[in-house]
Amino acid sequence: MRKSVVIKQTPTHLCVNDDCYSMRNIVDASVEELTWKDHLLRMLGLGILTASILFFMLVGELPYAEYLPAVGFVAGALLALLTSAKYVLQGKRMKIRGMPGLAI
Image 1 (tube, rainbow, N blue to C red):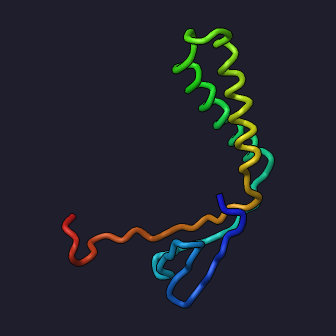
Image 2: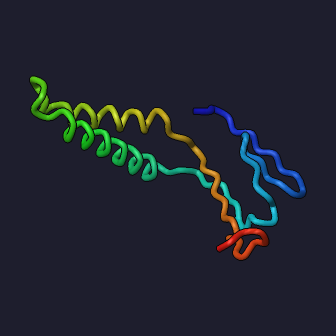
Image 3: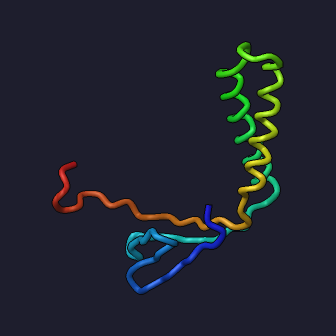
């Protein structure tokens, strides 16, 4: 995961790191600061996902296997906390229909 984000804007394109988007297709762009609720929701989501994977794959095969989902939940929540970002860049693009040369 990158620690820094490089944003370059030209009159025709918006480039974020290695991805470039045409400015005529971008309808709206905004930067939002993530709150503690967003971080908590991400921690819960990754924790539940990790715990459920461990529950379905490992329960009953190993000694003390009933504790593995709880350990997986804590590990997933810590992973979400360690990889969290302070800001999020949101962009809305216009959907293009009926482009020439494409069969729809």
